[in-house]
Length: 124
Image 1 (cartoon, rainbow, N blue to C red):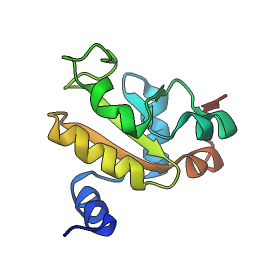
Image 2: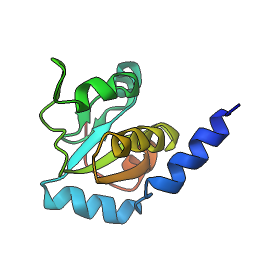
Image 3: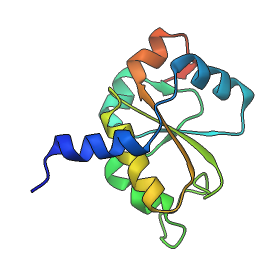
Image 4: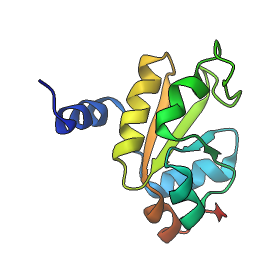
């Protein structure tokens, strides 16, 4: 039987954690997709990464699958996708899911609080 720790360890082994400074530079260059996988209450409370797609982790598979009516066109198989959550765990798990769905360039930014404290651009 698998535990939450098992799932998280597997996700962290597959989804690269990108350093904050590198993620901020990548954001400034444009062209990449930043995705906040926290629920709407968390985003409403703290804001999000400027320009980020807001796709709760529980809805990710539907938004990422171009065969569903809920597909978000920002999710393209060749896109660079940078995921953020509250602390990094949900972003890692979401990243593993995207890799399994055929996305090749998926990265874990960690927690939004770190992004904000590090000077990453934000919006309400």
